[in-house]
Amino acid sequence: MIWDAALGLPESSTDKVRTVIAASPRRGRPSNWEGRAAEVLDAAARTLNAEGLTNTSLDSVARSLRITKSALYYYFGSKEDLVFKCYLRSCQLACEAVEDALRQPGTGRERLAYYIRRLISPSNPPIAFVGEIEFLEAGHRDELRVLVHRHHQALVDLLKSGAADGSLSVLNSNLLVYALKGAMNWIPVWLKPGGTLSLEVIADAFVDLFFSGLSPLDRKADRAHLVPVSFSSPPLASLFDREQQSSQRRELLIRQSSEFFNRNGFDNCTLDDIARGLDVSRSALYHYVSSKEELLYASIVRSLKNTEVVVNTIVSEGGDGLTRIIRTICSAAELHAGPAGPIANYTSLKSLSLDHAREVQVRSKNIQSHLASFFDLGVEDGSIRPVNVRIARLALLGSINRLNKWWPQAVPADTSDVSDNLIHLFVDGLSPRRG
Image (cartoon, rainbow, N blue to C red; front, side):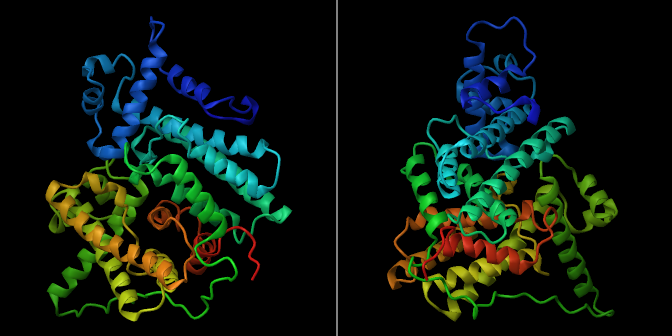
């Protein structure tokens, strides 16, 4: 079902769940069919979030429900069908939340707070992380993109209404919406079922962070003197140094592959598809890598290596906690769009071999520990006001890690504009400042 203006607005999340399930062309259903199909969707969403698209199969979902694979086919005909229905439910719930918020009385700030709490609510069914729309067949992709656009535009309208009534401080509403969505869409990636964090605590922390920012409320962060960690293009290889030339060709191939994976996903392509997409011969590609997994691993390691340079440089050059966070934001934007970019799609981590995944996890955790230390230092030195630093850090990581899904391919914005809006959201906050 594609949402169209002529269809009106949804009544409730329960109705939307039923809409998703009713689209499955099964006949002769028993009276409890919809309820059981909803349980399958719940299990599939949890499996997708925990295991990733590559490792999610009808077998794994069936095992989580303690039913047979053949029983699962009674509800959904294929993995593609099941993933589509999970993504569709997530997109419909997001659209419903923002449409519902726009109907509420009050200021734009109050409606945005309503939207955040509405979407991050324990009353919702499990929400699948919508990570690889490209995996789906063309008609399903188009249907989801209609919903994604509708949700995005409604959020833009919500921010503009807050700017108009003076309750929100907005730089670029379009870029701010991408930053907001990145942080909120990342929740299913890091939130563990049965963990110590409740959705109510997360919603409260997001509302506080997005409105008040990290810096103390009586001042606006001074960042005019701060510069990102920059990367220069490597010198051209000597015509007489074949080893150096080969290394640079491999580096270019890995960079182009990162862009390809970010744009097309991992599961819906082969090495032959990648070769065609990069306009290189199959033999040239196989000269540098032996498998699609190895190419993904090389792309992620390249991104990790450059990110390690960023955080290590920021640590060595010092500064208070907030200064380090601001430089991290600026440097992430510079890294993604500059010669050392793009930032790899870390949601593909679960597609790696076990040994590769373990290595990447160790290096990724080290980077995250540095970022966590920036937040802890900021609270200690007073450059950051008291916030839930764990949730604030994860929200920032979500916005940064999702840059590769929309910028610059969908939104041709300058690096400074992207970093300024990220800093505005996470450091200054959307509530107008007194200072």
